[in-house]
Length: 452
Image (tube, rainbow, N blue to C red; front, side, top):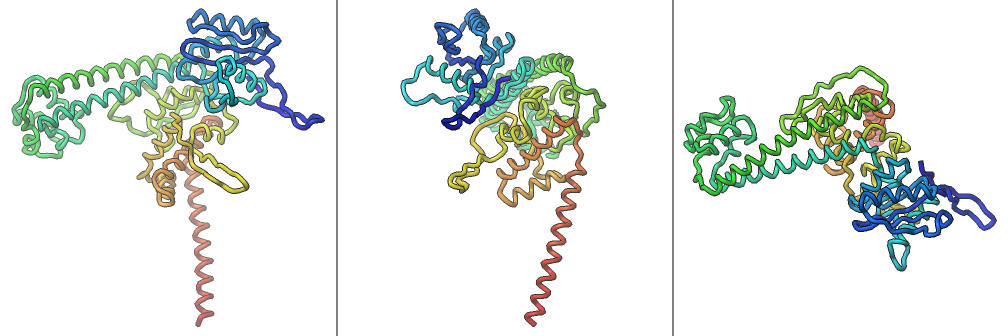
């Protein structure tokens, strides 16, 4: 693993030490790779390579010939991924760096100077690596992100379906809370099959529907325009296609997850199942609770606010051994973008805002926190307390930070969620508040007596 920066005292003051002498830097672009190694390793130490697969293997062979152990590169789009994977498979310690952390010095900017700059910074241990899971975990992450893309595409087709119905004055969404439910789907399929009689269509609604048959019948009196019916049929067909693709994606994710859990070495324990209900929409087609337990040896879905879809995204984004890549929970929280970026100058706090950047893991914890706004548990109480104190956004970030802390501690220490810890803390907090109020009442009584 690449070493971090070190300083040593010399006769001329503090100096940085070279902690990674066998380092190289790669400047990534769509059409070429610029690779720089230390000057004593090769006469031509700053070379340009192509981007084809054979060129990537040539880069790896040249780096081995130059006795390179660790490589740094900039995260430029997705162009870094092929060379990153090949170098990882060939045994190099590859450091992926955020573009904002490696801005070049002022002056003439070239690919060769950028590669040399990456190599120089990395040799002194001044680069902060991005979090990157192992290759099999990355495969799982790509599939999970692809599943989210399919779900968003399916949601767009539902909007197109609603737009076509609205243009015909077909008001299904006024009488059904979900047009994709049992009643809504039955009526839509009948409409697309050619049935346009409101009475016949209204009779297809489930008897448990809150709206009366007469009101449902009124909502089904439409103009039945030919072009809008065609749009409806196309949108419905696309929606059903996306649902089939999501199911196939779930099967593939399950296959990769089972392979992943088979090679993971975690302590075996008994799975304590959660009592949470499965989601009705976009439900996961396999036992994600068991998959996550096999990877982390704890059941994190027991955390309040954590859903199965959130759990799937965390498994895909983090992989199994993410704890090893963060020094402690504070570094994990900083990476998830759930803590403020304090800017201090002259002893004064200039700013303490949360940076405006998107971290997929941080977004998951914020969404989990948002679902606790009406929860009857200590974390729900904490959300409402923070909302009253600083507004909804602050409450979502603060509660998300608490959820991320619980998650990291559970996985790193292999302990199950225990709500009594927070219940006892809340009890002690209320008792302290009561003692404070009692003392205040006593002081007010003394003040009243003095006034009399």
